[in-house]
Amino acid sequence: MFLSDNDIKKGLKDGSIVIHPFNSKHLQPVSYDVTLGNEFEVNNRHAMTAIDTVNKIYPETRTVKVKDGKAFILHPGESVLGKQREFIGVDRNHLIILSGKSSLARVGLVVHNTAMLFNPCHYFYPTFELVNTNNVPIVLRPGMTIAQLLFARLTGPAGRTYKETGRYGAKNSNHFAQERGIAPKKKPAKKKAAKKRK
Image (cartoon, rainbow, N blue to C red; front, side, top):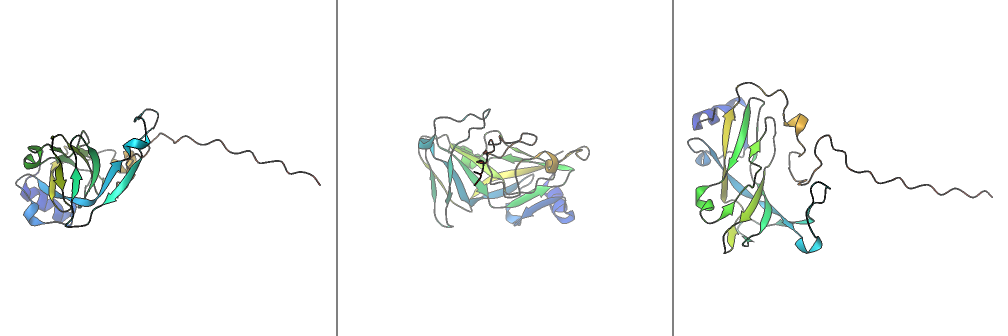
């Protein structure tokens, strides 16, 4: 069951929903508008051949920080990661769904490829998967309204929460973290050189 604006306000009051900072002007009838932060993660595409997630080969990236009042230009066909400005989360009785804004969708901006579901007890700064599907550049500015969040109440509390199953921390900055239960490959230990007897 999706929550209305009144339900969202009740959730904020009783602590089952966290939005910080909260701006009452961003509260819509059944959603809450969130804004773009100052950090972007950009692929160094000339430094690799291909992405191979099965073999844990991920792109080499660099962080670009844009000051308030400045712009980040997203070129046609380009895909970057962007950080949400608001810190959010819900308890084990709720989940969050990320959705784009129609005004931005009409100019070709995608804010998520497939990662639209935020699990119970995940408190963090979400990461946007920003893609320009237009044939002209799109200007992105820190602080602009970039997406909207929908909140839903579960039929019962989740047996397992993101604390047990998730891989990302509160800052959500380790974009290619190992899955739970999959240990990173260990480098073979170096053999110690035998000491020469005097």
